[in-house]
Image 1 (tube, one colour):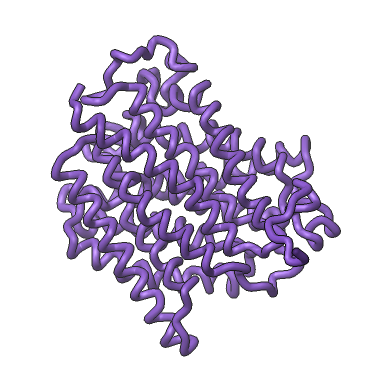
Image 2 (cartoon, one colour; image 1 turned 90 degrees about the horizontal axis):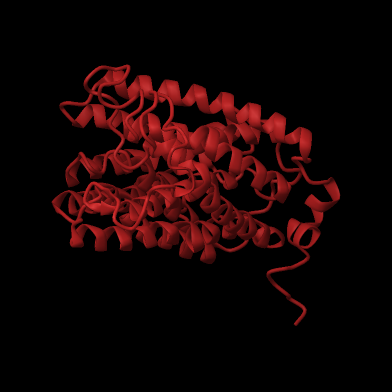
Length: 394
């Protein structure tokens, strides 16, 4: 065990949890209408709790268990059986590696929440998210990070896919799942209202930006120059994407908005996630600069051309951003394989579409997916949870 590595990953673990609670919850909650902010908070908080328990039960073992096959890690480490305080994963206590990866298993299904806010049942969200994490996310983790079929020595030969911190594992899977659910769920009945609190959106985005240092820097799994490089690339990409987003917004609409700027931040962070451990700061600047425009164009394409109500643009920002970052690795990194990068995108994308669609249909047989028209009109905070965030009468 290395003390410095362990100390850094303890901090990184806290930072990644901070991304979901409260960062993502505030970011999504501010983008929703005031009558639905608590429902967004409940979905993010509930997912965080449930994924933690499921990751302990079988998720970690599926993702990082002994390589019984190239498809999954098996159940040998279910409930962390045999994993004591002295067990190591590299230079880290394995319990810490478990906890760090658990925070990734929390935020990935939580990202999907942005696609269906304001019109979906809380029970459906929990059941679907739990099954999706176990049947979609955890196997993909094994394929890429756990020694499975898409990694080095897998189906693409000695050089497998390069995905440093989750362009495919986190952002592609969440983004594609989001657009599939949004398509099957159908649009909101009233899409005319703007974000109820740009202030809350900005606070949440800023927390995500800070937490992302743990997300990408921590993925080095060591306190060394590689972690410093990943952290620096992360910051430069986020800053550049924020600027190019509002520049493009200004050229198109004549105004640069706060919500637009911080959405650009998230686009830059998603795009640099898979590449952050492989590129230098100038390359990160290029990735972020393009992502700020590319993801904004994708937002318009999904809403106006595809006519899909991915409410908070999960696919356009996270999905497109993450997949773009995977492709840019092949552009900038000499030993990256185009076949492995593009092939892995295709395989995981197809798998995610299939699993997500099947789970939506199966869970929908057990519990209603969509709330009633009356509940949607009145807001989910009072209708489902019996609470409201704001009391303007007092």
